[in-house]
Image 1: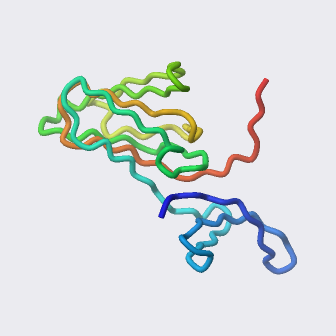
Image 2: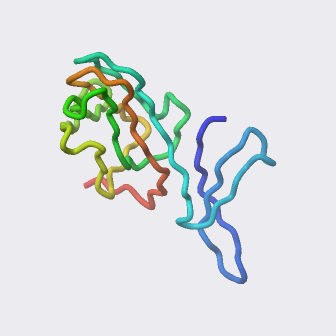
Length: 148
């Protein structure tokens, strides 16, 4: 089942509330969640990476159709001093952001508001070999996107 968070509305008592529907394979598999109580986490597993290796992840190409909020990054190695990575955000082939995360920052927690559009590509480059590279994310509901 691919991930797709659908915004819905439901009446509780006599008031209309924002809800979220996580679509299942059929409508009977759908899960309706109320308001901000969406405890779900997603894991992007880049797997084992050699030193200097680059891997890309584009949410829309992997069944994630809604904006997501990056929560944390974990680079696992056999040495606590060799887990430096570089994260880049790409719009097509254009780099729009870059952040280096050193071993002193691992595991790294992203600040609130690290929201990624599913059409952007997340690129990870490792400085040293890693046994596993993970990014944790959560679904978000963006009320409005205003471009000025």
